[in-house]
Length: 246
Image (tube, rainbow, N blue to C red; front, side):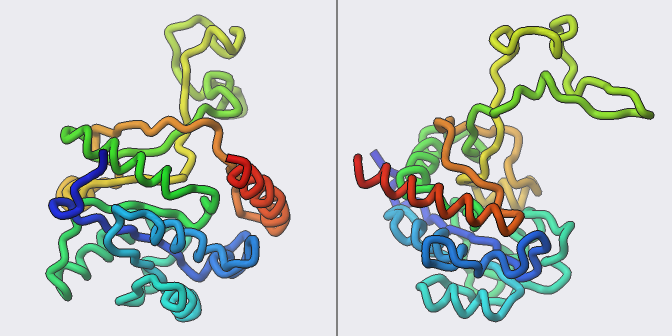
């Protein structure tokens, strides 16, 4: 079963600024022989339910690479929306407002694809789209996985003293066996699927009704340091090998 693309227009939006700090020019750095951003573009193009693939960037070189690989870059993102503290919401509202004002385009569903999650597949995106279609009450779908560490055993420091990060009805949850603690999930950044009204009318990247797409622990790597790309290269070889075996 799939979303009826005749009734639902789906836009993939890939945010990719040029000023990454941890790894300079991160979105153009090669991973498995391709610039990082190209992995997001290609998987979007391989997803039949996606109608358009658009990149939002402030960087002319990123724009050129994106266009060479078939993505649309109809505008240059303003510099003030490419700062370290710029939120996803501001970037997506800018892109959607531009499409409205210049093309009269109003996609029903927006697929948020972060370049820093290069191991996602078109099946992952399809599954997220199906979940949103099956839940008309939902504002969005977000991919999640079980965390490697339980947040009930995490702390913050307040005036030099450890304070539990989370409140719990369980006495001293941080001292309890992991198996007795509530099941938790973390947002793994693989894929978010969001309704247009959630972003524009509700002024949110998720809304209040967020349907989870629970994934087995995916291949994940925070690409914030140069060494992370070396790790990702090894993970990518494993990912491709596993795919070939299926």
